[in-house]
Image (tube, rainbow over all chains, first blue to last red; front, side):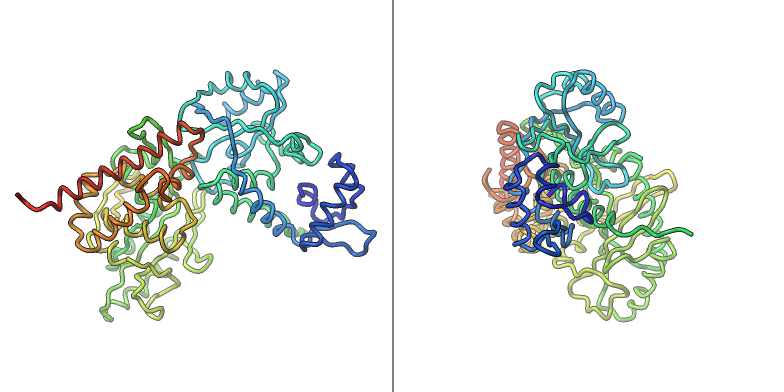
Length: 212
Length: 271
């Protein structure tokens, strides 16, 4: 689904999807044909690649299904969540060799912000002591910084949470569709922010006006 | 731009709009979540809604950047001509209608969004522009409070509902309009926590049958840790971990139990 949403105008075959997501051909084919049965993707012929019929509908369906699995974070209080603090955390992450990527409020650009007081978050794999030290994280409320573990199958750049990441001024953040899903799973005002990101994603698909 | 700066820009736009509306004799009431932000700014100098519960859980609701405005419309037809000027006032203040009852203005690097409401008793042909009909508007308008805030460019004078009016809109929103949403319970809880049970109890106990009804709705929503309103507060507050959630839930239940006791004491017959 992440592959389809990232390049919604490029048809992808089950074989190509399997190679890019590093999964078996059979598994990729089963997923794509299930999406086809449900009306989310289509293809011109049985041998051509799959295309989302409506990428926004596909993203909303992903969000709806993901909402039933709320985030289960390690929750902390960070005394400073400024851009400078996030940048310092990113530097600590890279220099310590920690695999991680920002999400929630840490992965949103100022122009995309719709709701305030939403927590920051980082997906990490393995130990993250350097992040705790860099951000001076404490196990108290308010829980404004969450540490998340992706499902083992999603801990990859091959179609997982690290796929199509965005370089933000302070570090690396998840792609917009993943961000919308994560905000929806957060619940509360996260759902409002998720809906705004879906609108943002939809507008990014519109053709840009040409000049000259 | 940080949230505090953006909130101040929104308040200044609100100041200019309400001043222009007042100049032609139009009464406008601020309703919804921004009431909390205005009260926090009045009391603490910051519009950020943040506090610590009785059980030591710290919460932050952040800022509310989108004013909801209830345009007060009387049955007197001679006053309706004044209403017709309201869309012009919005346009003169730089706002454009972007959909249905929503107006927007791009200013100082931010977008100010307004949502317009009218009493549900107002016929559509009397409304000067699209406005969402608001059930229980009569309670919101019954005894409004005037709040004055000194802003850098001048004084904002804004009318807000009293405790009965604010809570009546919130319980109606939760129990009738959007029962699956969590924000209305959260706002009702924060309002009682911030204003204090004494003042809220006074307003509800003195509100006649409407006050009793709203109190009953609050006690239904916040009766126990498993009640819908209490669960909503935990979800909306983004508090994680069993212990923290338990502490927050208990403080919510304790607050409304305390409110119940205050109301009962106020309504008890003199010995």
